[in-house]
Length: 456
Image (spheres, rainbow, N blue to C red):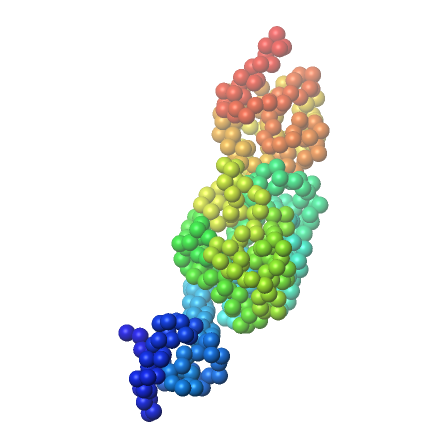
Protein backbone atom coordinates (compact mmCIF):
# COMPACT_ATOMS: atom_id res chain seq x y z
CA UNK A 1 0.00 0.00 0.00
CA UNK A 2 1.42 3.42 -0.97
CA UNK A 3 1.21 6.00 1.80
CA UNK A 4 1.25 9.68 0.83
CA UNK A 5 2.07 10.93 4.26
CA UNK A 6 3.06 9.88 7.77
CA UNK A 7 1.57 10.97 11.04
CA UNK A 8 3.64 13.61 12.72
CA UNK A 9 3.33 15.75 15.88
CA UNK A 10 1.23 18.31 14.03
CA UNK A 11 -1.57 16.27 12.48
CA UNK A 12 -2.34 16.73 8.80
CA UNK A 13 -5.93 17.74 8.26
CA UNK A 14 -8.35 15.89 6.03
CA UNK A 15 -8.52 19.00 3.89
CA UNK A 16 -4.78 18.85 3.32
CA UNK A 17 -5.00 15.16 2.54
CA UNK A 18 -7.80 15.69 0.05
CA UNK A 19 -5.86 18.49 -1.60
CA UNK A 20 -2.82 16.24 -1.95
CA UNK A 21 -4.80 13.38 -3.45
CA UNK A 22 -6.63 15.65 -5.85
CA UNK A 23 -3.37 17.21 -6.95
CA UNK A 24 -1.89 13.79 -7.57
CA UNK A 25 -4.87 12.38 -9.40
CA UNK A 26 -5.95 15.37 -11.46
CA UNK A 27 -2.67 16.95 -12.39
CA UNK A 28 -2.67 20.09 -10.22
CA UNK A 29 0.84 18.97 -9.36
CA UNK A 30 3.20 17.40 -11.87
CA UNK A 31 4.30 14.58 -9.59
CA UNK A 32 3.20 11.01 -9.91
CA UNK A 33 0.31 9.76 -7.80
CA UNK A 34 2.55 6.93 -6.73
CA UNK A 35 4.77 8.79 -4.32
CA UNK A 36 6.58 6.53 -1.85
CA UNK A 37 6.10 6.41 1.88
CA UNK A 38 8.21 9.13 3.51
CA UNK A 39 9.55 8.39 6.95
CA UNK A 40 12.24 9.57 9.28
CA UNK A 41 15.14 11.41 7.68
CA UNK A 42 13.73 11.19 4.17
CA UNK A 43 10.58 13.00 5.34
CA UNK A 44 12.61 15.65 7.07
CA UNK A 45 14.75 16.20 3.96
CA UNK A 46 11.68 16.47 1.79
CA UNK A 47 9.93 18.82 4.22
CA UNK A 48 12.88 21.16 4.36
CA UNK A 49 13.55 21.20 0.62
CA UNK A 50 13.09 24.49 -1.20
CA UNK A 51 11.59 23.59 -4.54
CA UNK A 52 9.43 25.04 -7.27
CA UNK A 53 5.65 24.63 -7.22
CA UNK A 54 5.82 22.44 -10.35
CA UNK A 55 7.81 19.71 -8.62
CA UNK A 56 6.34 19.71 -5.12
CA UNK A 57 3.31 17.98 -3.63
CA UNK A 58 1.61 20.31 -1.12
CA UNK A 59 0.29 18.40 1.88
CA UNK A 60 -0.76 21.56 3.74
CA UNK A 61 -0.64 25.25 3.14
CA UNK A 62 2.88 26.39 2.26
CA UNK A 63 4.27 22.98 3.23
CA UNK A 64 6.05 20.90 0.60
CA UNK A 65 7.08 17.37 1.50
CA UNK A 66 7.91 15.78 -1.85
CA UNK A 67 10.43 17.09 -4.35
CA UNK A 68 10.20 15.11 -7.58
CA UNK A 69 13.55 16.18 -8.97
CA UNK A 70 15.33 15.39 -5.71
CA UNK A 71 13.58 12.05 -5.51
CA UNK A 72 14.64 11.11 -9.05
CA UNK A 73 18.21 12.20 -8.39
CA UNK A 74 18.35 10.23 -5.16
CA UNK A 75 16.83 7.16 -6.83
CA UNK A 76 19.40 7.33 -9.62
CA UNK A 77 22.17 7.60 -7.05
CA UNK A 78 20.80 4.56 -5.21
CA UNK A 79 20.68 2.62 -8.48
CA UNK A 80 24.19 3.64 -9.47
CA UNK A 81 25.54 2.69 -6.05
CA UNK A 82 24.01 -0.76 -6.44
CA UNK A 83 25.39 -1.16 -9.96
CA UNK A 84 28.86 -0.10 -8.80
CA UNK A 85 28.84 -2.66 -5.99
CA UNK A 86 27.53 -5.34 -8.32
CA UNK A 87 30.20 -4.60 -10.94
CA UNK A 88 32.97 -4.50 -8.35
CA UNK A 89 31.84 -7.83 -6.94
CA UNK A 90 32.04 -9.36 -10.42
CA UNK A 91 35.50 -7.86 -10.95
CA UNK A 92 36.61 -9.20 -7.58
CA UNK A 93 35.59 -12.70 -8.65
CA UNK A 94 37.35 -12.29 -11.99
CA UNK A 95 40.59 -10.94 -10.52
CA UNK A 96 40.77 -12.92 -7.28
CA UNK A 97 39.47 -16.31 -8.37
CA UNK A 98 41.30 -16.51 -11.69
CA UNK A 99 45.01 -16.37 -12.20
CA UNK A 100 45.13 -14.16 -15.30
CA UNK A 101 42.20 -11.80 -15.73
CA UNK A 102 42.68 -9.72 -18.87
CA UNK A 103 40.68 -6.64 -19.89
CA UNK A 104 40.64 -5.94 -23.65
CA UNK A 105 40.03 -2.20 -23.50
CA UNK A 106 38.41 -0.49 -26.51
CA UNK A 107 38.42 2.89 -24.71
CA UNK A 108 34.68 3.46 -25.20
CA UNK A 109 32.38 4.71 -22.44
CA UNK A 110 31.76 1.38 -20.72
CA UNK A 111 35.42 0.44 -20.90
CA UNK A 112 36.60 3.63 -19.21
CA UNK A 113 34.14 2.87 -16.40
CA UNK A 114 35.65 -0.61 -15.99
CA UNK A 115 39.15 0.89 -16.09
CA UNK A 116 38.19 3.25 -13.27
CA UNK A 117 36.62 0.45 -11.23
CA UNK A 118 39.73 -1.70 -11.63
CA UNK A 119 41.81 1.28 -10.51
CA UNK A 120 39.61 1.85 -7.45
CA UNK A 121 40.03 -1.79 -6.48
CA UNK A 122 43.80 -1.70 -6.92
CA UNK A 123 43.88 -4.35 -9.63
CA UNK A 124 45.69 -2.20 -12.17
CA UNK A 125 48.41 -1.39 -9.69
CA UNK A 126 48.98 -4.93 -8.38
CA UNK A 127 48.69 -6.47 -11.84
CA UNK A 128 45.78 -8.77 -11.03
CA UNK A 129 44.08 -7.33 -14.08
CA UNK A 130 46.09 -6.88 -17.27
CA UNK A 131 44.95 -4.47 -19.95
CA UNK A 132 45.31 -5.16 -23.66
CA UNK A 133 44.26 -3.14 -26.71
CA UNK A 134 43.88 -3.96 -30.40
CA UNK A 135 45.08 -1.38 -32.90
CA UNK A 136 43.28 -2.02 -36.18
CA UNK A 137 45.35 0.65 -38.04
CA UNK A 138 42.01 2.27 -38.84
CA UNK A 139 41.23 3.85 -35.48
CA UNK A 140 40.74 7.56 -34.95
CA UNK A 141 44.08 9.28 -34.18
CA UNK A 142 42.61 10.36 -30.85
CA UNK A 143 42.10 6.77 -29.71
CA UNK A 144 45.70 5.65 -29.27
CA UNK A 145 46.60 9.06 -27.87
CA UNK A 146 43.84 8.65 -25.29
CA UNK A 147 45.28 5.24 -24.37
CA UNK A 148 48.56 6.92 -23.53
CA UNK A 149 46.72 9.47 -21.39
CA UNK A 150 44.92 6.91 -19.25
CA UNK A 151 48.04 4.76 -18.95
CA UNK A 152 49.74 7.74 -17.35
CA UNK A 153 46.68 8.73 -15.31
CA UNK A 154 46.14 5.28 -13.77
CA UNK A 155 49.73 4.07 -13.81
CA UNK A 156 49.49 0.95 -15.94
CA UNK A 157 50.85 -0.20 -19.29
CA UNK A 158 48.59 -1.88 -21.84
CA UNK A 159 49.72 -4.62 -24.19
CA UNK A 160 48.93 -3.52 -27.75
CA UNK A 161 48.29 -6.08 -30.50
CA UNK A 162 47.77 -5.60 -34.22
CA UNK A 163 47.66 -7.61 -37.44
CA UNK A 164 49.96 -10.62 -37.48
CA UNK A 165 53.49 -10.01 -38.73
CA UNK A 166 53.23 -6.21 -38.53
CA UNK A 167 55.09 -4.06 -35.97
CA UNK A 168 52.81 -2.15 -33.59
CA UNK A 169 52.02 1.27 -35.00
CA UNK A 170 53.49 0.60 -38.46
CA UNK A 171 50.61 1.36 -40.85
CA UNK A 172 52.89 1.26 -43.91
CA UNK A 173 53.95 -2.28 -43.06
CA UNK A 174 50.30 -3.25 -42.66
CA UNK A 175 49.39 -1.76 -46.04
CA UNK A 176 52.26 -3.56 -47.73
CA UNK A 177 51.36 -6.94 -46.26
CA UNK A 178 47.58 -6.90 -46.27
CA UNK A 179 46.63 -4.01 -48.52
CA UNK A 180 45.26 -0.63 -47.50
CA UNK A 181 41.83 -1.50 -48.90
CA UNK A 182 41.36 -4.94 -47.38
CA UNK A 183 38.28 -3.72 -45.52
CA UNK A 184 36.71 -2.67 -48.83
CA UNK A 185 37.63 -5.89 -50.58
CA UNK A 186 36.47 -8.29 -47.87
CA UNK A 187 35.13 -6.91 -44.60
CA UNK A 188 35.01 -10.33 -42.97
CA UNK A 189 38.66 -10.95 -43.69
CA UNK A 190 39.49 -7.46 -42.48
CA UNK A 191 37.75 -8.28 -39.20
CA UNK A 192 39.73 -11.48 -38.90
CA UNK A 193 43.07 -9.89 -39.76
CA UNK A 194 42.74 -6.66 -37.81
CA UNK A 195 40.44 -7.58 -34.94
CA UNK A 196 39.75 -11.25 -34.27
CA UNK A 197 43.24 -12.70 -34.76
CA UNK A 198 45.17 -10.04 -32.82
CA UNK A 199 42.48 -10.12 -30.13
CA UNK A 200 42.81 -13.89 -29.72
CA UNK A 201 46.59 -13.76 -29.96
CA UNK A 202 46.60 -11.15 -27.21
CA UNK A 203 44.48 -13.32 -24.94
CA UNK A 204 46.80 -16.27 -25.56
CA UNK A 205 50.01 -14.32 -25.00
CA UNK A 206 48.58 -12.87 -21.78
CA UNK A 207 47.69 -16.42 -20.66
CA UNK A 208 44.12 -15.32 -20.10
CA UNK A 209 41.78 -17.51 -18.10
CA UNK A 210 39.12 -14.85 -17.54
CA UNK A 211 38.33 -12.10 -20.03
CA UNK A 212 36.78 -8.87 -18.73
CA UNK A 213 34.75 -6.85 -21.21
CA UNK A 214 32.24 -4.01 -21.35
CA UNK A 215 29.30 -5.51 -23.23
CA UNK A 216 25.86 -4.63 -21.86
CA UNK A 217 22.28 -5.75 -22.42
CA UNK A 218 21.40 -2.17 -23.29
CA UNK A 219 23.58 -2.25 -26.40
CA UNK A 220 21.09 -4.17 -28.49
CA UNK A 221 19.17 -7.35 -29.13
CA UNK A 222 22.31 -9.34 -29.96
CA UNK A 223 23.41 -8.76 -26.36
CA UNK A 224 20.05 -8.51 -24.62
CA UNK A 225 20.44 -11.69 -22.57
CA UNK A 226 24.07 -11.64 -21.52
CA UNK A 227 24.89 -12.15 -17.85
CA UNK A 228 27.79 -11.00 -15.73
CA UNK A 229 29.59 -14.29 -16.27
CA UNK A 230 29.53 -16.64 -19.25
CA UNK A 231 31.80 -18.85 -21.29
CA UNK A 232 33.38 -17.04 -24.20
CA UNK A 233 33.24 -18.56 -27.71
CA UNK A 234 37.04 -18.43 -27.81
CA UNK A 235 39.79 -20.32 -26.07
CA UNK A 236 37.70 -23.45 -25.52
CA UNK A 237 35.46 -22.22 -22.72
CA UNK A 238 37.41 -19.22 -21.49
CA UNK A 239 35.50 -17.45 -18.69
CA UNK A 240 34.07 -14.09 -19.66
CA UNK A 241 33.19 -11.43 -17.09
CA UNK A 242 30.72 -8.71 -18.12
CA UNK A 243 30.78 -6.50 -15.00
CA UNK A 244 28.47 -3.81 -16.40
CA UNK A 245 26.10 -6.21 -18.18
CA UNK A 246 23.04 -4.68 -16.53
CA UNK A 247 23.96 -1.03 -16.97
CA UNK A 248 22.28 1.36 -19.37
CA UNK A 249 24.36 3.88 -21.28
CA UNK A 250 22.83 6.55 -19.05
CA UNK A 251 24.21 4.71 -16.02
CA UNK A 252 27.60 4.67 -17.70
CA UNK A 253 27.70 8.41 -18.28
CA UNK A 254 26.25 9.06 -14.81
CA UNK A 255 29.21 7.16 -13.39
CA UNK A 256 31.68 9.06 -15.58
CA UNK A 257 30.18 12.34 -14.40
CA UNK A 258 30.05 11.28 -10.74
CA UNK A 259 33.74 10.40 -10.56
CA UNK A 260 34.95 12.68 -13.37
CA UNK A 261 36.37 9.66 -15.15
CA UNK A 262 38.76 10.32 -18.07
CA UNK A 263 36.88 9.44 -21.24
CA UNK A 264 37.41 9.45 -25.00
CA UNK A 265 37.67 13.01 -26.39
CA UNK A 266 35.35 12.17 -29.29
CA UNK A 267 32.37 12.04 -26.91
CA UNK A 268 32.69 15.83 -26.89
CA UNK A 269 32.39 15.82 -30.69
CA UNK A 270 29.15 13.87 -30.91
CA UNK A 271 30.27 10.22 -30.91
CA UNK A 272 28.42 7.96 -28.42
CA UNK A 273 30.68 5.03 -29.31
CA UNK A 274 34.03 4.94 -31.03
CA UNK A 275 35.39 2.30 -33.39
CA UNK A 276 37.21 2.52 -36.71
CA UNK A 277 37.30 5.99 -38.24
CA UNK A 278 36.28 4.56 -41.62
CA UNK A 279 32.81 3.48 -40.46
CA UNK A 280 32.00 5.44 -37.28
CA UNK A 281 29.89 8.60 -37.33
CA UNK A 282 28.39 10.99 -34.75
CA UNK A 283 24.81 10.45 -33.57
CA UNK A 284 22.96 12.53 -34.68
CA UNK A 285 25.18 13.06 -37.69
CA UNK A 286 25.26 16.83 -37.13
CA UNK A 287 27.07 16.24 -33.82
CA UNK A 288 24.43 18.17 -31.87
CA UNK A 289 24.49 15.69 -28.98
CA UNK A 290 27.74 15.87 -27.04
CA UNK A 291 29.17 14.96 -23.66
CA UNK A 292 31.29 17.92 -22.56
CA UNK A 293 32.76 18.70 -19.14
CA UNK A 294 30.95 15.71 -17.63
CA UNK A 295 27.47 16.72 -18.78
CA UNK A 296 25.36 16.41 -21.88
CA UNK A 297 24.82 19.19 -24.36
CA UNK A 298 21.83 18.95 -26.69
CA UNK A 299 19.21 16.22 -26.71
CA UNK A 300 20.72 13.16 -25.06
CA UNK A 301 17.97 10.73 -26.13
CA UNK A 302 19.60 9.80 -29.48
CA UNK A 303 22.46 8.37 -27.42
CA UNK A 304 20.59 6.95 -24.45
CA UNK A 305 17.65 5.21 -26.11
CA UNK A 306 17.79 1.43 -26.09
CA UNK A 307 20.28 -0.03 -28.58
CA UNK A 308 21.38 3.44 -29.67
CA UNK A 309 24.94 3.44 -28.33
CA UNK A 310 26.32 1.62 -31.37
CA UNK A 311 24.10 3.19 -34.06
CA UNK A 312 27.08 5.15 -35.31
CA UNK A 313 29.23 2.03 -35.67
CA UNK A 314 29.76 -0.15 -38.77
CA UNK A 315 28.02 2.49 -40.89
CA UNK A 316 27.65 1.42 -44.52
CA UNK A 317 28.96 -2.09 -43.88
CA UNK A 318 27.15 -5.30 -44.72
CA UNK A 319 27.79 -8.94 -43.97
CA UNK A 320 28.20 -11.24 -46.94
CA UNK A 321 24.61 -12.41 -46.61
CA UNK A 322 23.47 -8.81 -47.11
CA UNK A 323 22.46 -8.23 -43.49
CA UNK A 324 23.50 -5.08 -41.70
CA UNK A 325 26.77 -5.43 -39.84
CA UNK A 326 26.48 -5.02 -36.06
CA UNK A 327 29.45 -7.01 -34.72
CA UNK A 328 33.13 -7.17 -35.65
CA UNK A 329 33.40 -10.90 -34.98
CA UNK A 330 35.27 -10.84 -31.68
CA UNK A 331 32.30 -11.75 -29.50
CA UNK A 332 30.32 -14.02 -31.81
CA UNK A 333 30.08 -17.79 -31.85
CA UNK A 334 32.61 -19.35 -34.19
CA UNK A 335 35.28 -16.78 -33.42
CA UNK A 336 37.47 -19.60 -32.20
CA UNK A 337 37.95 -20.69 -35.82
CA UNK A 338 40.95 -18.47 -36.22
CA UNK A 339 44.05 -18.74 -38.34
CA UNK A 340 46.78 -19.20 -35.78
CA UNK A 341 48.35 -21.93 -37.95
CA UNK A 342 49.48 -22.27 -41.53
CA UNK A 343 47.53 -24.19 -44.15
CA UNK A 344 48.59 -27.54 -45.65
CA UNK A 345 51.09 -28.27 -42.91
CA UNK A 346 50.99 -31.97 -43.78
CA UNK A 347 50.48 -34.01 -46.94
CA UNK A 348 51.60 -33.64 -50.54
CA UNK A 349 51.31 -29.86 -50.87
CA UNK A 350 54.89 -28.55 -50.82
CA UNK A 351 55.88 -25.16 -49.44
CA UNK A 352 57.64 -22.47 -51.47
CA UNK A 353 59.72 -20.54 -48.97
CA UNK A 354 60.90 -17.56 -51.02
CA UNK A 355 60.48 -15.55 -54.19
CA UNK A 356 63.68 -17.02 -55.59
CA UNK A 357 62.42 -20.55 -55.01
CA UNK A 358 59.20 -19.69 -56.83
CA UNK A 359 61.16 -18.34 -59.79
CA UNK A 360 63.29 -21.49 -59.90
CA UNK A 361 60.16 -23.65 -60.15
CA UNK A 362 58.77 -21.47 -62.91
CA UNK A 363 62.04 -21.65 -64.87
CA UNK A 364 62.73 -25.35 -64.28
CA UNK A 365 61.04 -26.48 -67.49
CA UNK A 366 58.73 -28.72 -65.47
CA UNK A 367 55.00 -28.44 -65.04
CA UNK A 368 53.58 -27.64 -61.61
CA UNK A 369 50.56 -26.24 -59.80
CA UNK A 370 51.02 -23.35 -57.36
CA UNK A 371 48.32 -22.13 -54.98
CA UNK A 372 48.91 -18.56 -53.84
CA UNK A 373 47.15 -18.16 -50.48
CA UNK A 374 46.83 -16.32 -47.19
CA UNK A 375 46.21 -18.44 -44.08
CA UNK A 376 43.72 -15.90 -42.71
CA UNK A 377 41.56 -16.01 -45.86
CA UNK A 378 38.33 -17.92 -45.28
CA UNK A 379 38.24 -19.04 -48.92
CA UNK A 380 41.74 -20.48 -48.63
CA UNK A 381 40.71 -22.19 -45.43
CA UNK A 382 37.59 -23.46 -47.16
CA UNK A 383 39.50 -25.18 -49.96
CA UNK A 384 42.25 -26.62 -47.74
CA UNK A 385 40.90 -30.17 -47.57
CA UNK A 386 39.90 -30.42 -51.25
CA UNK A 387 43.21 -29.03 -52.49
CA UNK A 388 45.04 -31.50 -50.22
CA UNK A 389 42.98 -34.35 -51.73
CA UNK A 390 43.85 -33.17 -55.22
CA UNK A 391 47.56 -33.02 -54.37
CA UNK A 392 47.51 -36.67 -53.28
CA UNK A 393 46.57 -37.80 -56.82
CA UNK A 394 47.97 -34.97 -58.97
CA UNK A 395 50.17 -35.79 -61.95
CA UNK A 396 52.46 -32.80 -61.29
CA UNK A 397 54.11 -31.34 -58.20
CA UNK A 398 51.68 -29.19 -56.17
CA UNK A 399 52.93 -26.18 -54.22
CA UNK A 400 51.65 -23.49 -51.85
CA UNK A 401 53.07 -19.97 -51.72
CA UNK A 402 52.02 -17.48 -49.06
CA UNK A 403 51.13 -14.43 -51.10
CA UNK A 404 50.00 -11.99 -48.42
CA UNK A 405 53.63 -11.56 -47.40
CA UNK A 406 54.83 -10.98 -50.95
CA UNK A 407 51.98 -9.09 -52.59
CA UNK A 408 54.02 -7.27 -55.23
CA UNK A 409 55.77 -10.45 -56.31
CA UNK A 410 52.64 -12.57 -56.65
CA UNK A 411 50.81 -9.79 -58.48
CA UNK A 412 53.64 -9.48 -60.99
CA UNK A 413 54.46 -13.16 -61.41
CA UNK A 414 51.54 -15.32 -60.29
CA UNK A 415 48.41 -13.59 -61.57
CA UNK A 416 47.28 -12.79 -58.04
CA UNK A 417 44.75 -10.11 -57.25
CA UNK A 418 42.93 -11.97 -54.50
CA UNK A 419 43.26 -15.14 -52.44
CA UNK A 420 43.30 -17.96 -53.24
CA UNK A 421 44.79 -17.96 -56.73
CA UNK A 422 45.69 -21.31 -58.28
CA UNK A 423 48.10 -21.35 -61.24
CA UNK A 424 49.33 -24.00 -63.63
CA UNK A 425 53.00 -23.54 -64.50
CA UNK A 426 53.67 -24.80 -68.01
CA UNK A 427 56.98 -26.26 -69.13
CA UNK A 428 57.84 -23.08 -71.00
CA UNK A 429 57.58 -21.09 -67.76
CA UNK A 430 54.28 -19.38 -68.56
CA UNK A 431 51.72 -19.26 -65.78
CA UNK A 432 47.99 -19.83 -66.39
CA UNK A 433 45.45 -18.84 -63.76
CA UNK A 434 42.66 -21.18 -62.69
CA UNK A 435 39.73 -18.87 -63.30
CA UNK A 436 36.87 -20.59 -61.48
CA UNK A 437 35.18 -20.51 -58.08
CA UNK A 438 34.73 -24.31 -58.15
CA UNK A 439 37.31 -25.66 -55.70
CA UNK A 440 36.71 -29.38 -55.30
CA UNK A 441 39.52 -31.90 -55.80
CA UNK A 442 37.98 -33.02 -59.09
CA UNK A 443 37.84 -29.42 -60.31
CA UNK A 444 41.57 -28.94 -59.78
CA UNK A 445 42.28 -32.31 -61.46
CA UNK A 446 40.22 -31.27 -64.47
CA UNK A 447 42.15 -28.01 -64.66
CA UNK A 448 45.42 -29.93 -64.68
CA UNK A 449 44.23 -32.37 -67.35
CA UNK A 450 43.21 -29.52 -69.65
CA UNK A 451 46.91 -28.83 -70.24
CA UNK A 452 47.49 -32.44 -71.28
CA UNK A 453 45.11 -31.87 -74.21
CA UNK A 454 46.73 -28.61 -75.23
CA UNK A 455 50.19 -30.23 -75.12
CA UNK A 456 49.05 -33.15 -77.25
